[in-house]
Length: 115
Image 1 (cartoon, rainbow, N blue to C red):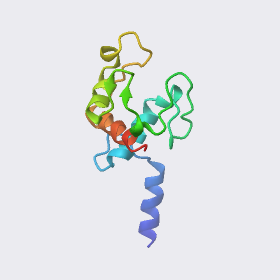
Image 2: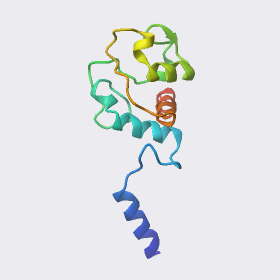
Image 3: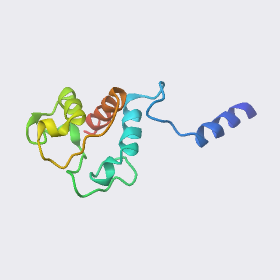
């Protein structure tokens, strides 16, 4: 019993990172959104401090029809947009972030879970 309490307290001291292999896709997305400070530009439901006013709010993201007004809102298109937003809409304010595939697909899972 004491060992379980000790392990729980150690886990609390070391929060999950976007590179941890056993993190769920949605949780991975939440972590990546926080690490890449997406909330400094966007309002994002469920992300503490994500109250930016520069980019569009991302609440109920899964209900949207389009991404950046150009691409149909599919998981594949969102992943493509996150990898290279300037390719989709040259000159837009969305920066290209250095993210690996797991982080990108985690963000996709998180946002497409916003119904």
